[in-house]
Image (tube, rainbow, N blue to C red):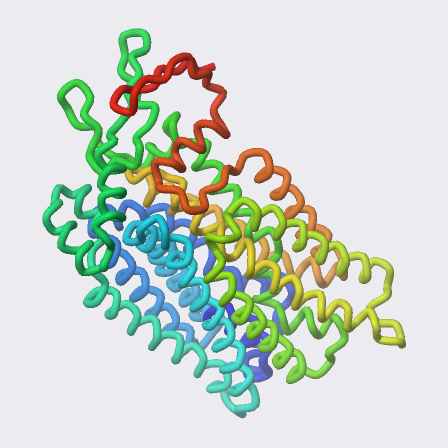
Length: 478
């Protein structure tokens, strides 16, 4: 909802009359000031969620976000407004990655895709809500025109915080990790997970660690989604944030961080934050028409997410990433080419409508591909011991890339009508190439099967002997 609000609010007459017209750089800073605090706090979100539990981590982040939105609603100057956005960012970084981890952990493998993408549907509903609230308040002849959206946003965030704290059950995997297996079993019953699915998950937890004796030292080269601390030499291996860079998971950590960053460098939030500006540039000179066009794009995104939600596991993560990336880049290059050829503002007006429709098509393709799979993929490819920390790190890279997009998009648009589109299209093509080489499919796989898929895809190890499932694999690593 904040994403749907901030772009329209910053171009409202009531906002600019109170705070003055802003340059492209300041405009970008106002919009993007939420993102760096979100990136910083997201690095600590996994640790917080590991200590307090997933629901409490979500509740704390949502409460901080709500307080930040309230500060924005009450802002008397630009500085106060920016401080509110920074506070929002701290809260968002704390709860968003944890939310995805929580859903992955309470979901049986057969339903993980649809369940983990359900928040994306509500995210798009928030976009629609934000755009149309601003469309409804823009003609109010007072500062309430831009304050009311933030009042509503703050109220919803605080309500979400209390609902998370008092309604969400603890993650059963987190309970097992904390040495509370009986409580975990009771939570599985509450969640309605079948005994067959539960046994499959418990078998993953019991697989433990594969240990390779090399040069007189014990190396942990893999942990098949074990929730128990690794026993080495009679002691317990303490969990650390830096486990995400250990030999068995660092490739997955890097891929997740890359994909989450490139998700933003596709330009999606440039489109969402600055939709009114993009439509005005394409020739919709009326601010009301630009606001309405922005709302229509949000509706298209929402509608596209519904089938994507149900078909998430049928399409597969890899195919939707590659084919979606090809579609996204093609649309961006088309828009950039039309602007570069000066074909948008000709008297016939055909180019203008091609650009407007192409923006809608871009949002449609993105929401049916990259929006659905990337966040789920970043969480599900990690073993239990690193899932929260690695997902937080991936979301941190997402926030940093988002900041770059939000800050530079209005600057690029003010200096070149086509440069931003070529940049976003190029980033999308790079993502397609990297993912086609290094991204294994995870559709319908259990978390230990995902582990094995990554070994086959990314490791240069040569398997010299394979024993029974009760004995470790011996591998030569380069």
